[in-house]
Image 1: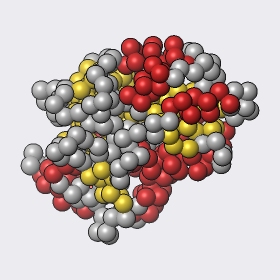
Image 2: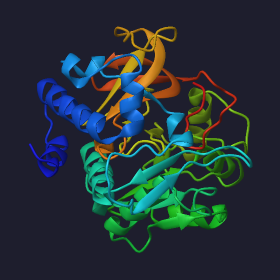
Image 3: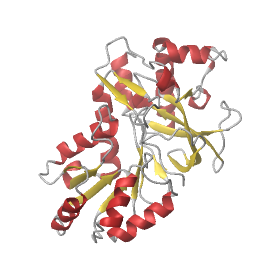
Image 4: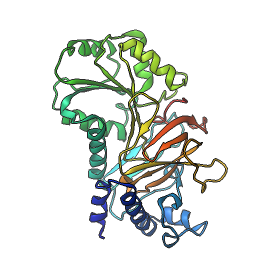
Length: 329
């Protein structure tokens, strides 16, 4: 199978058997073409020939994206996504060789969970991201706004009153309204310009970014539900180092698209994968990361629910607060 065929196979996955086969092929490709990852695998003596299931593949600690160029292609990257961080903090860099793969990933996932972007007015409240370069979240939302083909869709910085007026003006519109925002900005709006709109879809992308105190997700969601008079708050789980997103429809359980999988690792043994219902470190397989590294050990804590569902319990390193990271909850 050539590289283009492998890339295409990622978004055709329908079951566990297919996922395992493609994951093993991606592991082989990245072992051969990503020196940073190959050196990491070689240290404990792990080779593709020794692996027959994706759970046995080594997960690269996410911190490597801060200190190394984690890349699996020879071409000059056409994009570099950078994580947010406070002044002086070393940030992650994700080198993107094929932006089309990222676009395919987030668009297929959005359609899978929410339908066609043309069915929405998409209002983005993402201060702190809009003002800086290299945000993967802004790249995604900008494209979704464009695909919505709505003159009402767009970004808002600190124009919270204007945003509230816009939401009220769209009441009764045949399209759904998606308000997508970083947590601290949604809280600011909830406290200062609450808008009663029971049909509004509110989605938080996590992250207080040092602007406000961290809080558990349930507390945040209760405040937002009361402010907007909605029954549920949606959540997005994504980060600079990933090209795929998981989504929650308000029950605290995140679902992954077919080419993405979450495993829970033992905190004391990073090579030990835990069973359903047990909590530990979140390791992610994101096959859309074909040109960087698809097997990443994050600093988030979670619990495995099913092969495509997981819960977030918080972080196990509170000293490193990443912008896209979710609240403790």
